Every structure is written in C-alpha cells, then in structure tokens.
Length: 131
Image 1 (cartoon, rainbow, N blue to C red):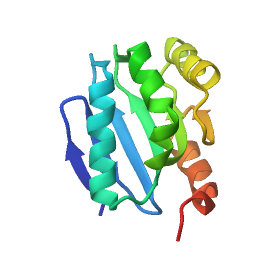
Image 2 (image 1 turned 120 degrees about the vertical axis):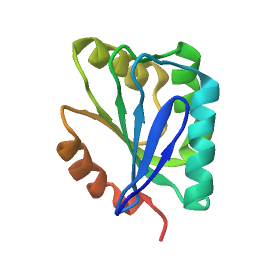
Image 3 (image 1 turned 180 degrees about the horizontal axis):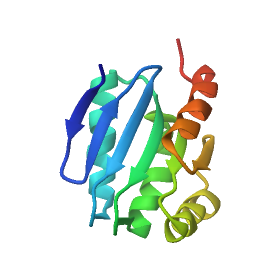
Image 4 (image 1 turned 90 degrees about the vertical axis):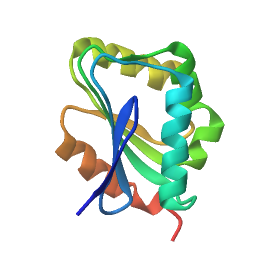
C-alpha cells in the first residue's frame, strides 16, 4: 500500500522500490516555493534517502522558469536520483524538453508516454540509490 501526501500544488505518492510519484494538480503555475515544499516532504518522509521521481502534471499546469531552474539545480540532486517525466501532450513535451536540454539536471532524466514505461525505466535506475 502506498502512502500519499496532499500538498497545495501536488500529490506525492510513495510507491515501492524507492519510486515517488509527484503529480502537479490541474490549473497550477508551479513556483520555486512549491518545488521546495515538495522537496521538504520527500526529505522528511524518506529520511534523507534519495528518490526515483516520476513526475506528471495536470491539465493547464506549467512551471515558472524559476521553478524549472530550481528543480534542476545541483542541490535538487540531494533529493532525487533520477527523473521520469510523463508527457501529457505535445505542449507539455516542449516544456519538458526545455527542462531537460536547457536546465540540464545533473542526474538521469527521461520522458515517457505513460506511467508503466516510466516506472520500468526508474526501476532500472535503482542502482543510483545508496543502500
């Protein structure tokens, strides 16, 4: 059974195998403060242990450029070992490409069309989590 935390901007679901699914809610403009609140919850729940992060976003949801920069800053890798972004549609794919190519997080990151393929890839990244 997975545990879930509801925040103002997102739902965080702690799954098996160190996978954490963060879903940003519909109609949100995600800010750096929202990202930090999510990081704080990850750190508290996982007691400082990194997560394999699956990210999805709701309809009409986007991140500010500052939030994307913050989510990909070197310090963010203290919470996250790898990211799997689930693409909602073509416009979301364009935004995700900006995140990956422009902000260049210092960890493995891939984009996927669905949760199952994202989860499969994240399980292949499990070696990045310290025992």
